[in-house]
Each structure stands twice: as C-alpha cells, then as structure tokens.
Picture (cartoon, rainbow, N blue to C red):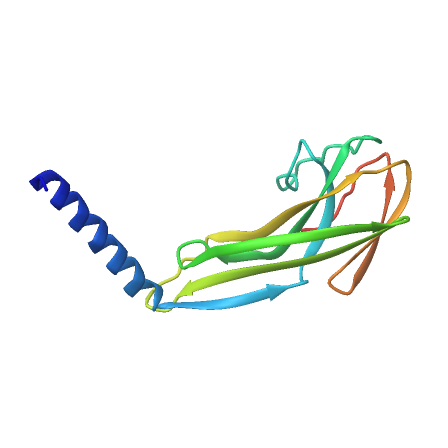
Length: 153
C-alpha cells in the first residue's frame, strides 16, 4: 500500500469516526402532517418566494403539492435528514400526508435565528379543470383550476 493511499484511507476513517461521534450530539425530531400544503405547477417545483406571485396552474400539466412542515428551523443548528409527502386524488379531493426528520445539534452553544424551511414536494399528477378540496394537517382548503393557489406559508 502506498503512503498516499494509506493517508487517504486514514483521512476517510477519521472523517467517518468524527461524523459518528458528532451524530451522537444530534437530537432527532419527527414532524408529521403539519404546516401548509400548496398546489404549484410541476415546473415551478416549490412555493414562490415571499412577495412574488405564484405561477398559474395550467389544466393538463403536472401539479406538485408543496408542503412547508416547519417554516423556520434554525439554519446553523438543524439539518433536514428526510422530508417527503404523498398526495392522493379521489375525485376532486386531494389528500396530503407529510413527514420529515430534523436533527438538532445539541452541542451548539449559539443558534442564530436564520431560518431553514423544512419542506417536501410530491406529485398529484395532471388535474382537469375544476374546484378541488385539499386536505392536509387537519385543514381544508379549496383551489380552483385553472388558476393560482395563493396560500400562506
């Protein structure tokens, strides 16, 4: 084994050991079915930026459900380990479930209040024109397509 290869292998082992040790200092929180679910065109993929108009949803185009499970996790001290959602269509009712795992660094002494949105996106497919009821996190919203889903983040 060459010295370069040995040094590289030791560096990888050290990084792996440090990452494992550091992971012990992370508290995991499960988020489920909370926050706001919005409909967005698939090509937009995410909710619009604040103070920006959302893109209109065109009939026949794929539609995504965008869920913000937590609008302000701490950017410096939290990390999103997983986030997902599922949208099912039953007639004109869209049922959305969402979940995420957020890890918080318990060793951090200071966590600045810079926000990290915990978000998930899933497809509901192409939707024909009509009025839809979106069910998520115990809330009911009505969206008419074609059109724009304006929802509070």
